[in-house]
Length: 115
Image (cartoon, rainbow, N blue to C red; front, side, top):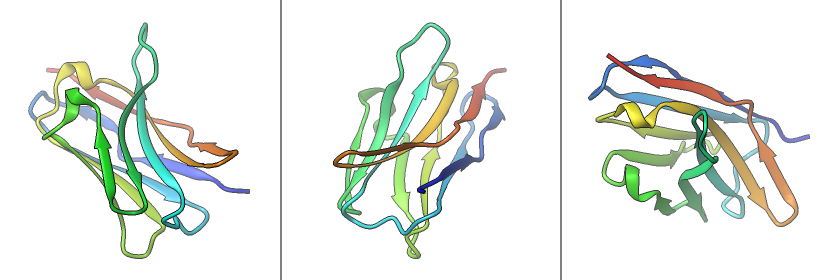
């Protein structure tokens, strides 16, 4: 049973920064694709950032240059470093692990960017 637990969300002012963490119950091998998604009320869940083969990254256009996805050296955590946050970044952020038929989601962590 693979489990993912997100943490690090909260309320932050526009222009601020947050680090979201995704703790995995298994080693995050390179063969897993890790992703961060977000969903705001009235919006579809969207891919924010993904990490493939442990090194290759892909970002939504709206967060390029502001967000960074990474994996810790112990391969137990995936992070999403967010800076220059904007109100439109508000939403529930979810961690995802995918490989073949394996598709695991965390419970999500709320990020609210507001003055």
